Length: 470
Ligand code: GLU
Image (cartoon, rainbow, N blue to C red; front, side, top):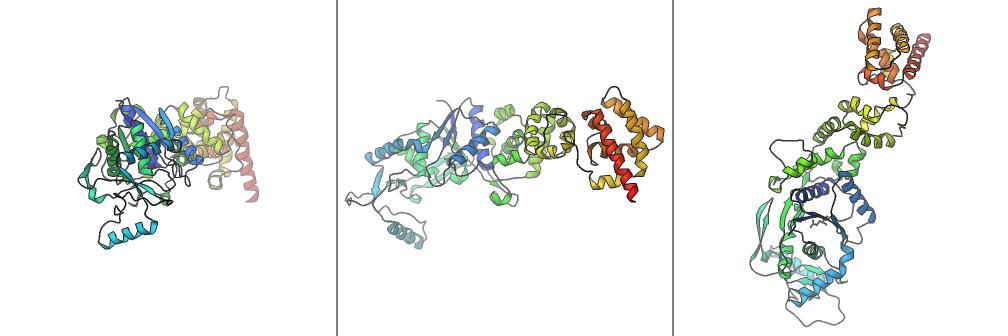
């Protein structure tokens, strides 16, 4: 039997980091074992499920390159099958009609609570057949009364739950629609899921699901419940922490490789290795290496991983992602240096691609005004002579490259007997409009020769005006 995992999101919002990590672990485990990876959309909650969310989840998975090879299945397309299985359970004596009203069930729950027990349904209709006519009913599962269920959880170890703690859960609502636990069980069975990898917020459902699977004579998959992701304050990660959809990380300037690498390490380790290529993750990932304790999300570490990938991935590839940010910030990059060149000079200067785009505008657009602080400091009267001399030397270059530019700057400083900074800083402000840039020769080489001459004129005009107003 082929090892098969699944990712089973409910489409009630975007793909958040917790979901993405569950998808990643399921995907990795299938890949590693040459298995299948199923995508199943659990859209039975008709009020909260939206097509928009389905699209957002798939966008997130596509951006992270987590490809499923079976599905997507939609639970709403499978209602007939769920009804068939419910009928089978009734026929074999594993399920029954319950005619209790909401008030009756509420009273049972209160009674149990008063006795210090967990609120539960008391099995009132379990063995009755005196069905009233024309009254709504739900279908309940006849949970075994004795014994216990043992989950051999790959991550958490063995967990034993006494059947006395489980009540007869509802399989079908009074309108005939199947409930969450029933549809998951039928799907895991029909889709030949061998490994259920999911967040440990579902661990309470697992004994119930195992009991239903047993009643159906279906094989029991292996379970791996992954601990939650916490915010840096130790509370469950939520919107309050700025925990947002996966696509927000793209918008914020992270590479998919970085988020994936960050997520694989958030709850799993392999020695003290931090950086994993996709192939390495597939090779080395194992559910037994997953932490039992929850992990805390750490943005600083994500930034560190992102910096690693911006610097080490092929600049041509990083440039494709940078292009998205340039476009997002309205910077037209048709004329100007190749984006891969920008990646080469800026990658070790920024935290994100968004920032890289922000500080690279001057390569593609005329700056409209000088950064006030940089101009105040560097475009002063004393800068006139160095700027004029370096301008004439740069204008005279017959070959515009970093080496020649470097020589022009050097010889200007030598001839005027001033330090390099006295030439370099005004020139930097002239060329970029601001006081920060990659090395000056590399920066200038990426711009056009005549563009630089014009920008130096602009700086000289600024100095003239400043002196006139002094
Ligand atoms: N649809 C459930 C969720 O989004 C997951 C169910 C499962 O993995 O069994 O939380």
